[in-house]
Image (cartoon, rainbow, N blue to C red; front, side):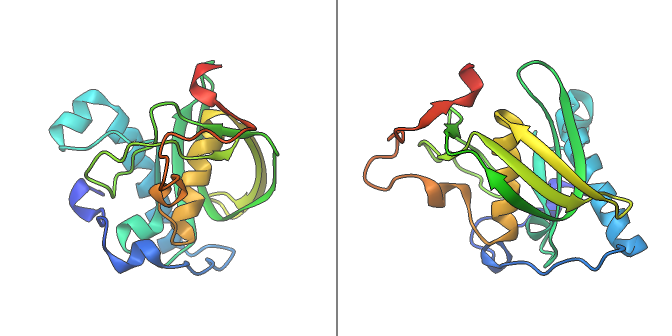
Length: 185
């Protein structure tokens, strides 16, 4: 079982690494790791389990956060309408995105970052992602709003990018012209 002790923290070189593609079909070991990653996120959202195992609540986890040089991520998140987006993905890539931007009004956080980093993190309001699911089947996901922000955050991890890299250094609360807060729609 993955715990908070398994999560590498800010400053770890793996968080700045562009990760390697996972061979498809995935190995049993990679499938098990990805299932565990998804279970960790689900457990972190369960108050009882989070307290029992001292987990910080999260909505996504990428393999580099476990020190793994693999293009794997898990998300488990609800949109504002309560629709659940729960995926374990191999080799996800954004194949198209909206011109319109989106961001979370309260900024973003990260299980690998143990501090508050105030500021607007500009993202795309909508993205289309191609990837392989837990069984190795190709999937195409169209995400908008909060789930789109979450998957972009996790894909960034696969490319060695941290969320605060996107924050405007001179004006952390600068909102780009074509962007709106996706958590206030």
